[in-house]
Length: 136
Image (cartoon, rainbow, N blue to C red; front, top):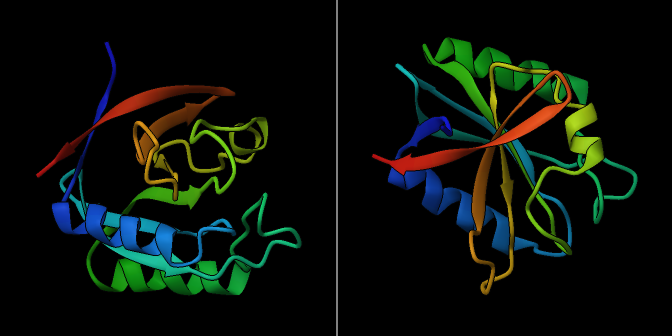
């Protein structure tokens, strides 16, 4: 049985807008909320050397976003990025760098024709399992 993650409809709208703003590079950011429901998007700048195929949030920005999340009384519930040229399944690199096992990892596709433009995964101990996204 698959797990589930609850997401506000406004978050889905913001993620869709973010991924389509610059579809040639990986967008990225953090997702926060409370009581197990994602309610806020904290977009970040992708500072990876090859942003078309990788994402990285600068440590200073990551710390600032985490402070902002805590200051708003929220919890980190998810991390998102996009896959501009491929399927929105976790890559081996995504699995290797899943440093927050309690967070849901959202992978977005900028392609309008993608069967699922937003997918979420639990990544723990080197294994990824897809989560059902319930819009609330």
